[in-house]
Length: 372
Ligand code: IPM
Ligand code: MN
Image (cartoon, rainbow, N blue to C red; front, top):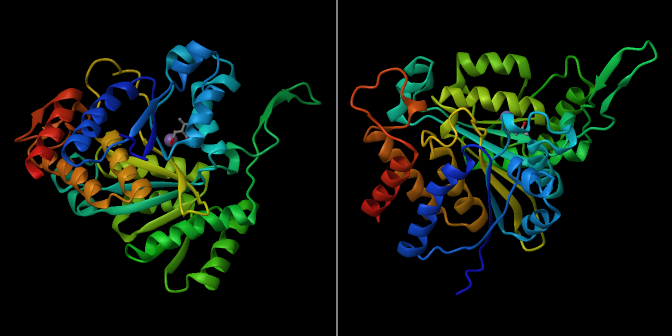
């Protein structure tokens, strides 16, 4: 029977296919036990697509993504493709998806599970209870600004250049997402840029301030330079609620924030477009971690970030909040019970049980069985 939920699965490279396999178990479980079904299509992206089609994302896959209600993405890249032409690098597949689907708002939550307080490299009192949401602008800035390239300049030197560029509407639409989300959380937004040295930073601060005044004055807004924020995130991360920033700063700051939680292997993300006339947003869900080629194919990868990305999809694309809660609770309980993939085995490991990718996935499904 058609489910009216069209999902495109793009496992990609490295550990992507392995962690996606664990999510497939949860998808199957959801279909059987909660009647949450999907019409699933699958395709190649990244190095896998490059090997087969000579491009990191085929036009066909791009079209399927544009038609899908949601895309569940694994990870791309690896040393095998290091020498690929820049325009064909595995990462370009992901960047094309983001750009052509116009997924301008990237939600990157960083939440510390109580069971993992000791896995963080920061003191427990600094990170216990941490729950922040970084909103990264995803379709503009220096990732896409023109001109970009390399050439030999008039002095005969090789020179490379990228352009950091933002329009006022691009800044406003991502800030609006931050304000809206803050209203459902602790009602605080911190906007980060480098208004002290960059024109785009000055514009960013102006537009965030204007929008706040016009439509969101009930939300507490403050501003910080991105470098100062990098420091404050380590000093007192719990002071923050929602952080909104540009594409490049968001990339860097979200990796930093993820380490507050103990591992890059835990954190999901949602990339959202603007709502259409029916309220539907194009969306792609992916873990923050990369393809981890060093551990790929060994059954060592942590499937939690991919699992939580799936939970975010249930929540944001399909309005299945209860089912999302259930998946998140199952993950939390499995961690509480002591299950740890290798990446989580730091700090105090008393009472923990080392598991591989599949065992972690199985433990989550078993916990779902217990919860239902
Ligand atoms: C991320 C990744 C990507 C980025 C790469 C794979 C293109 O690091 O999603 O954070 O730089 O945006
Ligand atoms: Mn990144």
